Length: 349
Ligand code: ASP
Image 1 (cartoon, protein in one colour):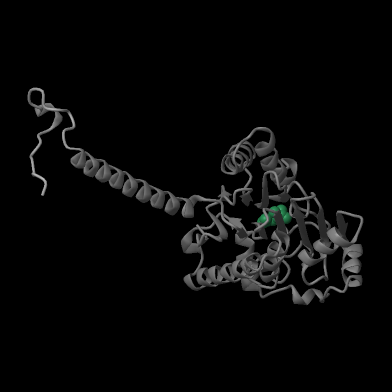
Image 2: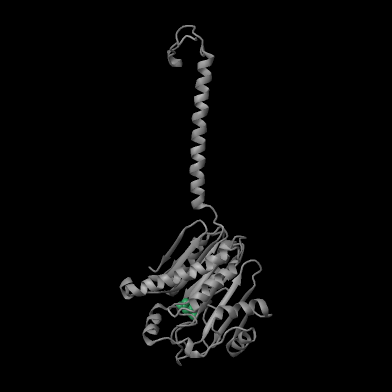
């Protein structure tokens, strides 16, 4: 049996007593220290990995909008709010399904937009606002970030889902944008569903409501392979002149995607989005000015559109790291996002 001796601290060492007189004691002490350090290391790694789970790049991300407007909460009845949120959620889920199953960002964007186009709550396809002449003229565009390929249709009156027509223009024509009758004819030739005008025109009450909201729908996504895509679809501005084309089908104005920077879709006063090349400007600020998505979006939506032009609107977007932005200078913007990390939200105000 070893003699148990009590040692004071190093400072209490007496006379010529050796500094580390008991090797076994020292071994124990070193062992304890190592154990303590290991526990510390592991717990900090664990903490780090927990934080990374929240902040790390998600496998995929999707963000959508259903239009922006200067509405207050009391302007929208509770049941209407619930209906909008449920519709946004449905569109989000349709898009997420594509991303979850290893689909492309482009197909996720299309899936989400088709749901909103078929839903009369939004100002796109079914339920779109009317021109001065009481007709529906629809615009849509789509862009993918890996090769800057894009497609758009403007002023279509019969294709049921303009975003699908935009996809056909992009993938199966030599052009970027087709307009009017030619675009409807092209869509029909490609086998897309066409419908009479009455299909798009909803009840007066709903139309009045949409007028206030000044909707439009859009989506932007990043898929598991890091590909970005964005799309936008709209009935345009209420009471617009025949033939008026807004920003939504204009690549660089209402829609833009580039795998080096971001994918964005806008909603708001289209003329100002065109004049300021809003979607492209956000991309360009990121690429050349090294602004991040959030600050690029803030500059464009607030400093330029709002302060300089008094123009209403907002954008949604996603960057190459899966960061989401939903920036608007209106009091409301119907919007929602989801990430593979589990983060999600559906918001109006
Ligand atoms: N930006 C669309 C347009 O000007 C309308 C909207 O987003 O509300 O056509």
